[in-house]
Every structure is written in C-alpha cells, then in structure tokens.
Image 1 (cartoon, rainbow, N blue to C red):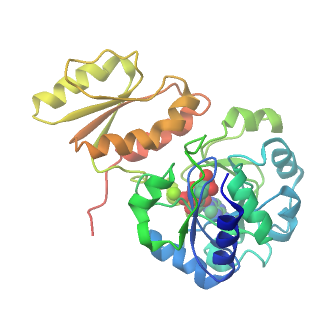
Image 2 (image 1 turned 30 degrees about the horizontal axis):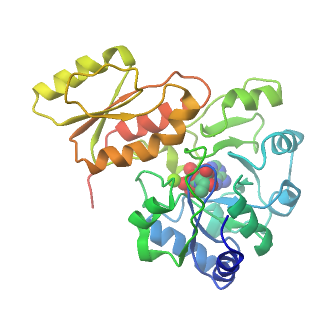
Length: 323
Ligand code: TXA
Ligand code: MG
C-alpha cells in the first residue's frame, strides 16, 4: 500500500483538475474527477481518444449508484452485491451528475467499483467519482503495471500511483442493464457464466452494439507486431509457414506447447484466468523483441478465456493506417 502522503497528493491533484494514473484490479486507469469537464477533456486528449467515446465512472461503493443512475433495477443491485468491488461495469440510465463529457452525450452511464485498495482509498477520500479509461494511448495495449504507464504516457500525467501488477489483467466486463434485457457489451475480467449464475438466465454477448464502445472497434488492443490467431494444434505449422516467408516469429502460448527450436515463447498459461493476468504484459514483452509476427495460441472459450480470445482477436484485426 502507498503512503498516506501520496494518497493525499493524488486526491488533491484530482480536486484541482489534474489527471492521475490509478491502479485497479483490471488495468491501470487514467483518472480525472468526472465532474470536472476540463479534466475529463484532458483525459481524452492524453489518450488521443475521440471525445464521443464514453468513459467508465469509478465509485467507492454500490450505495452511491443512485446519485449517478436514475434507475437502478433489481438486477443491478444483485450484480453489484455479488461482484463489487470487482471487474464488472454496469450501464444504466444516467442522472445529470453523469455529464455529457463523460457519457459522450448518451443517456446512459457506465459505472463500476474497482477492487483495488489504492483506487478505493482515493475514491473514498475524494468523495465522488473518477472517469478512468485504460491508461494507454488509444488503440494500444492496456497497461497492467505502473511501469507500462510510465513507458506509454510518462510526463503527460500529473501523478502515477504504483499499486503493483494488476491481478485480473484484462478490462472489466461491461453489462448493459439499460434496455429490456441484460446484455454483455464487452467480455472482461468477470466471467459471463458468473453473471448468468447470479441473474439466473442467459445473458447474450453483444459486442457490436450501436453504442460507441471503443473496445469494440476491430483493431483495438494492438501491439506493433502483427498477430495471427491459432488453435493449439496448428501453432507449429503456422510458425513454419511464416518463417518460410522470411518473417521473425514469436509465440504466445502455454509452456506445454512444443515449438520448433529457436522460436521464442512468451508464456501465457493454459488456465484462462492465468492467461488474462499476463496477456498484456506478454504482448508488450514480445513487442519489445521486435518480431514481425506473433502467433497467439487461443485459450478455451470459457470463463475469462472469452475475454482473452476477444482481446487477441482485436489485436489480430486489420489496422487502420497510422496518422
Ligand atoms: O477495467 C476497466 O473497465 C478499465 C479500468 C481502468 O477500470 N477501464 C476501461 O475503460 O477499460 P475504457 O475507457 O478503456 O473502456 C470503457 C468502455 C468503452 O468501451 C466505452 O465505450 C464503454 O466502456 N462505455 C462507457 N460508457 C458507456 C455507455 N454509456 N454505454 C455503453 N458503453 C459505455
Ligand atoms: Mg481501453
């Protein structure tokens, strides 16, 4: 845990309109007081993210929900009770306290209670909410350590709080409860099966919703190297084909995977939660080695494996030209 001096400094920075990097259990957030429009605009500017893409408001406890959401259905209370603090974001009809700057002018707001002692201490002392997208430049891999944030954003932020490596490792699961039926807008750090268990029914995953979810743009979460997806049984043949084309290849996959000699492996455990925890760190490590292509071995499509597959698919998607 950080010293109380640094926590005080963080809260003061937020109060005077500053922007800080804040550890959460999922990924590091780029946080501003969500009721300070200029500060929120600075978050968009630092990220290079279109201002119409809404941000998640982070609050200290579920009891504060009604001040941000004008309707809190029973399902929302159930999920909040079961999973907050934790890697779950709820989309609900907003109150005026959730401003246009944060919601991108939509009539709904995305809210969560993060499960990290540093984030909770800051929110508690601030007595309000912070808008916090992942603390990376738009379209790049999210940071899961303070070092990642420093490498990406450096002096662009007023303060970086170091809360250690994120324990979940992928962004929160976003559940839309503003419509007739609940739907998952982004698979993430809370397994959809867990949500279904608490709600007692199937909850469809609708990542291509009409709302502007930047994580749903095809080429999000991309490293510099190209990414090729592969089922475990095809990894070796893919590596050989790429090598025959003269490409330098690295593999993201479990230690059990036998590779041709000389091909570097970036260990991503077989178990889906373990894979989620290290995914972004391994993508960064592999990128530093300057490979042309990374062959990513897909985890099982269950539990957090669904989020890992989703992020890998986005990393592998065609990219818009730089500029
Ligand atoms: O785990 C996380 O959620 C991390 C940490 C820092 O809390 N935050 C994060 O924020 O991933 P960001 O901005 O990278 O992703 C927020 C997502 C975006 O895809 C955004 O479009 C969606 O939440 N979102 C925000 N408000 C929404 C709304 N009203 N309706 C639908 N989607 C919304
Ligand atoms: Mg992000």
